[in-house]
Image 1 (cartoon, rainbow, N blue to C red):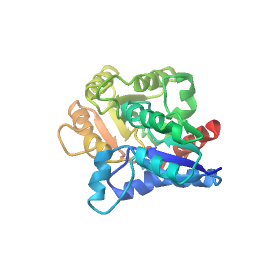
Image 2 (cartoon, rainbow, N blue to C red):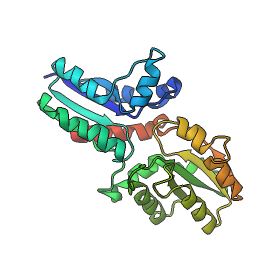
Image 3 (cartoon, rainbow, N blue to C red):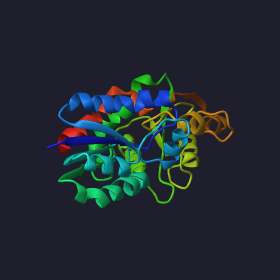
Length: 259
């Protein structure tokens, strides 16, 4: 039986960031599961079209599924790199897989790293995302996630609840202003807790535009400058979670469970 894993990401424009944050995930999965052929798919049509104009080609998940079905693959596992089951996961992975399920003998989907099903499981995950050792004296950690633009994604609140229960100096927000906790919520929380210094990192697979511009950019509206304007000292790191081997191992472990 021909077997395949499709590592499915939103995508990223910067190819150097892709090498550090997405290609590393693909390489880890190839090494861990040599009996499977590993393919790559993206869910961002915008990024695919933008890079195609430069001669760099990636495929949407529906196109990759159609190609490997035609090539005779019968057992397929979709491995999303999406952190949470938000709109991108629900609309561009679950619905696509359901539509093409009849083309395969077996089609499985690995859950995102963080779900609302078992917040108690956040302990091991939090240890890979929350790097307390990187904090300097007096600093607390601010994590910028993505959020969902059209409905509330509760995973970030659940992660915050876990961090608070565990006594971690962590503050979680999302870049989508229509979701929460957003930047206004973060600033209010930091002021309420009289936080003076923060270390800010993306809670995202790749350190792409959201990390470089929305979080650490020069614009007065960036998280760095908005928090700084509130009288709080800010230090930033724009590395995506994909650069962390311990975080990438979560994907390998999740694949082992479903296989």
